[in-house]
Length: 74
Image 1 (tube, one colour):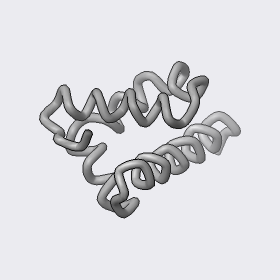
Image 2 (cartoon, one colour):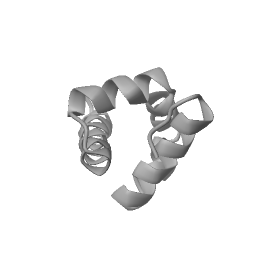
Image 3 (cartoon, helix red, strand yellow):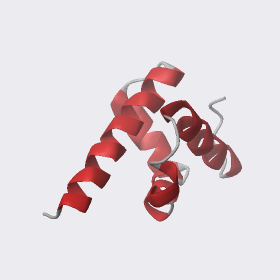
Image 4 (cartoon, rainbow, N blue to C red):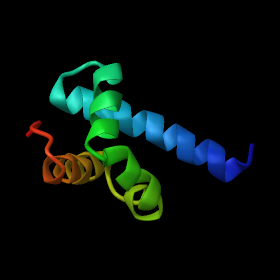
């Protein structure tokens, strides 16, 4: 596994954890929510930008993507 892949995976895990903490849900629930409402897809597509933002800003961006796709966490 390349260093870039390890960094991407590590960041994804950390961001899911931050998302879960922000919305006071379990990490498993956060993962399922992000997957269902296209947050993970957005993260994969825009990793190069998201990883340069603060975690609160990245969580807010993912939350907005999910809302745009039918999610209801605010």
